[in-house]
Length: 135
Image 1 (cartoon, one colour):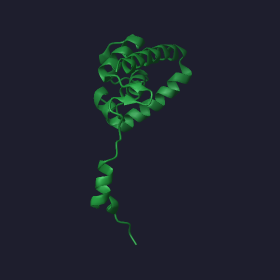
Image 2 (tube, helix red, strand yellow):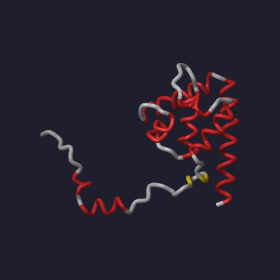
Image 3 (cartoon, rainbow, N blue to C red):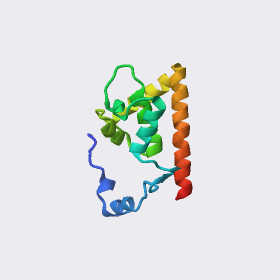
Image 4 (cartoon, rainbow, N blue to C red):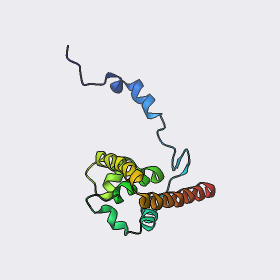
């Protein structure tokens, strides 16, 4: 018999009530500390990579800029892949996923990028620690 596409559990009042009581987020914090503002993350990344913030919104071949920005926005601003895609002017959340995978590839090959991205990540970690201690 063909499978139905209706999720019966999701349509029952008890299930909807239980789902509404689930807390998916942690407010403005993650397990490791406070989340940073996405614009603040982009500014720190741009400074660390020595580019203008607008460069992350430009499409370029063989450029690690969007990959680095996307990964660090996911990690330090707590954005979803869809939100990162909207912020960076990318097509979809899937394109962010592809860029994050490319970040890992770039990171293993390019020592200069590894050094710059590592320093940028330490700066973001310091900011996040300061933010979580002040709240």
